[in-house]
Image (cartoon, rainbow, N blue to C red; front, side):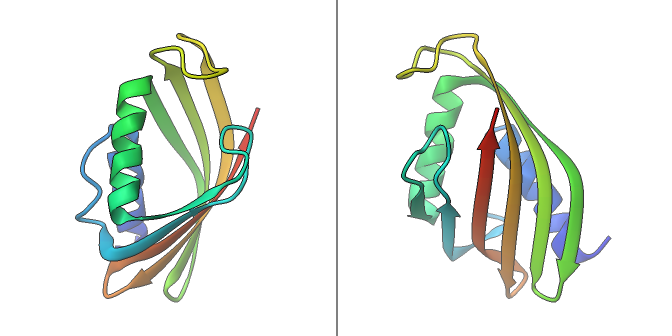
Length: 126
């Protein structure tokens, strides 16, 4: 396993359990989420905004799980295929407490100086 692959695995685990992601990402990191069923317009976030989003996730989800199916590395780029599952802890908009959510996700992670510099997400919710 390469160092970059190990970082991606640790990062996905930290996200899964709502832990600090800053050891794995650059302070100038950019997080791009393409439009999907939960976030119809998509969004681009900086690290501060991504950390806030992680905190919101912690408050609305009872739990979440990232199941990594495949990972491919090419230079400073890693592509990962992940199945994400989560359970709502509260009602939030059209999502209801105890509702199970599932998404098939593709991620592109771009590295610089040993940290994730850019994350691009393609989430396909069931």
